[in-house]
Every structure is written in C-alpha cells, then in structure tokens.
Image 1 (cartoon, rainbow, N blue to C red):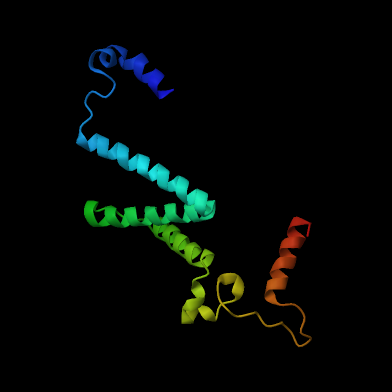
Image 2 (tube, rainbow, N blue to C red; image 1 turned 90 degrees about the horizontal axis):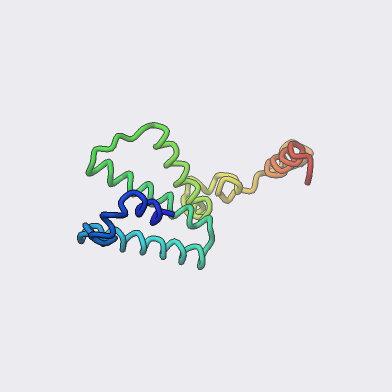
Length: 143
C-alpha cells in the first residue's frame, strides 16, 4: 500500500533517481535498528509470552522517558509518573519478585506478599481472599 502511494505521489522522481535515492548512513542505520527490533519482538513472543512482551515494551518506554528527561529536558507530568509506577509494580507482581522485599512480605498474597489473610471474626469464617472472590462471583453472576 505504501509503495503504491509513493509511486502515485513521486513516481517520476522514483523512476528517475531510484527508490533508495537519498538514503544515507543514518537512514540505513535506522532501517537496521527497526528490523532488528522487529526480530527481537518476534523472538520474545515465540520463546516467552505476550504479557512479558508488554512488560518489556513498558520498561522500554520508561527507559526512553528517563533518557528524554536527561538529554532533552522532557517535562514529566503527574499522570505519567503514576502510570510508570503502576508499570513497575505490575512487573514486580508478575515476576513474583515482591516477596524478596521485607516490607512487602507483610502484604497479602493477592498483592504480592507472603501473608495468608487470617480468617475474620471469632467464628473463623472466610478469609479476605475468599470474600474478594465471592464478591467477584456475585458481581458477575457466575462462578
């Protein structure tokens, strides 16, 4: 589709100079980097899973923004910082890495910690995780 548009718009110039006219070393380096990135994405999806690919993309966005702040004076907005914190938390939660931090060990298991939530009430009925699961079942109407 892009080739058709290029020939429709600049067909005479392409016929005269060739399709790759004006390509310099910087353009070829960009083509190689983009092609390599595409191959890396394919390898990640093939050998891991799509969720890990999404996390690696998120980390790449965070690194790119940090570099942009350092070198190009990119202003960070509050919502971006909250989003970045959410991405980092999700990465740690998915990788089950929160349990290695002392402060996080005291959190319930559904938040990444090691604590099984104790039954509430004197009669020992239902843990918090069971209550959350039951609330989700009640809300959706199915088990």
